[in-house]
Length: 302
Ligand code: AMP
Image (cartoon, rainbow, N blue to C red; front, side, top):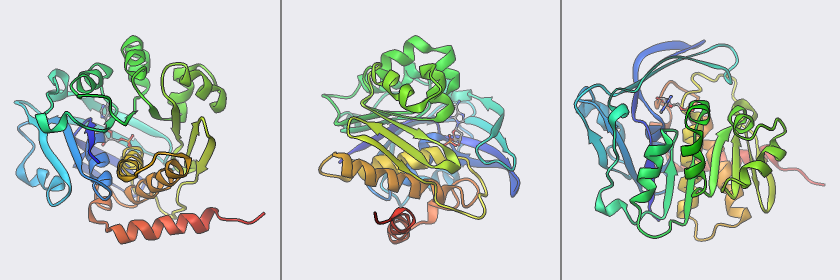
């Protein structure tokens, strides 16, 4: 079933202990779409500048990604620069240049408006709302990501969109900031009062935790000897999670748990190489093989 994403399509400059790249394609919506496209068809909403070439757009070609909602505006594409040290969970943002994203007003192509699954990637909550408002009928699932910047700067707008969100997918620091609670279970209880029915806390190399009415489920990060570039792990996780859910006929606890594993699978592939290098070249067979690895990794008898 249809899956729509709105978020950044970017040029990233990245620096990790394994190397440095000056300009590579990134952005939350890019990682999300590529990851989700292994599971389902994705409709992408975003904006790029006139510096985004046909060669750059190749990342979306030959996949189940519709880019008729990817606007091309005069100006430069969103740019982000980040650096990681030995701890992949700690990143320093060196630059954020909104460029064409600053004046972006999303307009959904008609064919996108019947979306049943929606992922509002980390972007201005006002833009997230503008997208949701254009969708006809009630989607089966709305999931949202956000960050400290929006939690601090636009709390009212964020609350407004959270009231229409079923799944909130954020990291542990953001969970604590949004709820004013250090304990993550207490934080979840607070967040449920704002609208979401499920909270998925992304914890980088410690994996991810889901809290919802059926209880708590935790999935580890796949153990890797070398994490080359943590960028996009969260969005690739979201892509695997939502892609799997969008294709599932039911949405019960068992399905949500499997979606968590597929999220973690896609996050683990994303960090193996710089930028999108690893996840752009995957096969569904490799993805399912890693999911079976997760089963072995976590299986035990009582
Ligand atoms: P993550 O999955 O959290 O590692 O997301 C990394 C991606 O988010 C990078 O490719 C960036 O281009 C993008 N990004 C970073 N900061 C922002 C921002 N403020 N708004 C939108 N996208 C961003």
